[in-house]
Amino acid sequence: MNLSAAAQAAILERESELAQRYARSRALLDRARRVIPGGFHLSGRPLVDDHTTPLYFEGGKGALVRDADGHEYVDFLMAFGAYLLGYARPEVNAAASEQAGRGSLLSLNHSFHVQLVEALLPRLPGAEMGAFFKTGSEATTAALRIARAYTGRRLVVRAGYHGWHDWCLPLESYVPRGLDAQVLEFQANDPGTLQRVLADHGKDVAAVILAPEMVLPFEPAVFHELVRLTHLHGALFVMDEVKTGLRIEPGSACERIGLVPDVITVSKALANGWPLAFTAGKRHVMQAAAGMHYSATYHGDTAAMAACLATLDVVAAEGTRGHVERLGQRLIDGLNELVRELDVPAQAYGEPLSAMPFFRFTYPEPAQGALMTRLFYREVLARGVLLHPRHLWFICGAHTSQHIEETLATCREALLASLQLVRA
Image (cartoon, rainbow, N blue to C red; front, top):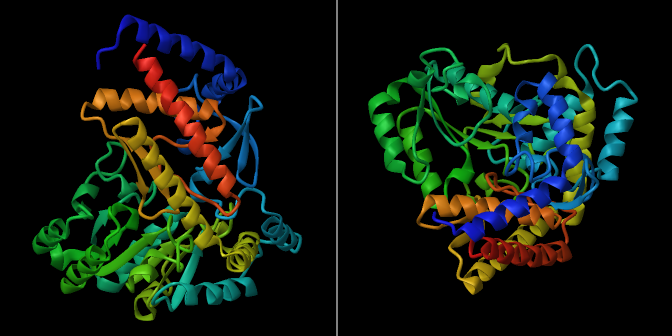
C-alpha cells in the first residue's frame, strides 16, 4: 500500500503518542524479557505491537479490566473465553474459596468428583461417562487417547485449534518426527476433503476431531455429513467444544444442531476463570479409558469443581447463554451497519455464533488490510475497548446493552481516526 509522506508522518506521530500511554507496560516487558523466554506467555503476546498497545493487566471486575498503566477497558476477550459470567463473580469465587478451605486437593477420590460428573453429563448430548482435566489441551488429548484405545487404530484427522500439545503442531521442528503422518488435516467447510483423507487412510483412523468454529458459516448439514463420513469408515467423531460448550444456546453446538458425538470436550465456560476441563462421551467408548493413564496431580482439585457448580447455577438463573447471544448479535449487526455506512471493506460475524463475534477487514490488497487492522485496533484500545485483532471475541454475562452501544460508538471513532491517518 502506497502512503503519502504526510500519512506516514501522521502515523508515526500517533505511534509516539500511544507509546507514552503504556510506559509501565513496556517497563514490565523489559524486565520479563530477562527472565521469561520471549518475554511473555503465548496468550500475552502483543495485541498489535509491544509499544502502542497494553501488555499487562492488573485486575478485572465484571466486564472491565484495568491495565498496568491505570487505564480501564471494556473487555471482549474475557481471558480468551475463560469467563462466561465476567471477572470476579462473587458467588463463584465464594464457592471455590469455601471448598478450598476444606482442602480442595486430597490424596484419593472426593464425592465432588462424582457429583459434578453427574451434573454435567445430562447437559451434553449422548454423554454417559466423563473425566476431568485442567485445560482444553488436556481434554482433547485425552479424547484422542481414548479413541485410539477404543478403535485399536493410531491415526487422527483434525480441523481447528485443539491445544498446544505435540500432536496439535505436527509440522513444527520442535516436536518428534513423524507426527505429520499420524495427524492428518481436512477443511471443515468441505466434507469432500475429509472423504478423500478417509478414502486413503480410513482403516487406520481412530478419530476425526473438529472445533465447530471452523465451520463458517455455521451450517448444520456440514456437521452431519462429517459425522456420516467418519462413522462410514469406523472412526469416532470428537467434537471439540472447548470454546462453545455450555456457552451457547441450548448448551452446545452439538445440541443446537441435533448431533450426538462419540466424544465431546468442554472447558472455557465451565468454571468462570477457575481451571477445569471435561471429556465425556458414549458409555461404550469411554469405558475404553478404564485403567488408562491420563491423570495428573491437580485433576482432582475440587475448588474449581465447586466454582463450576456455582457457575452452572448462575447461568441457569440469569439466562446467560441467551443474553450473550443477543448482545453478540447486536454488536455484529452494529459493526456491519458501520462499515456499510462508511464504505469500508470489512465484515463482522459469529465464529461460529453470535456469542463469539469477530471483525476483520476485507481489503483486496493484503498490505492495506494489515495496515487498517493495526491502526483500527490501536485506536479502539486507546479509547478503552479491548478487541483482539486475531482471535475471536467472547461476550460475557456482565456485558450490558450500554457496553455494546458504547463500543459501537468507539469503533466508529476509531475507524474514522484510522481512515484519517491513511488519507492524510
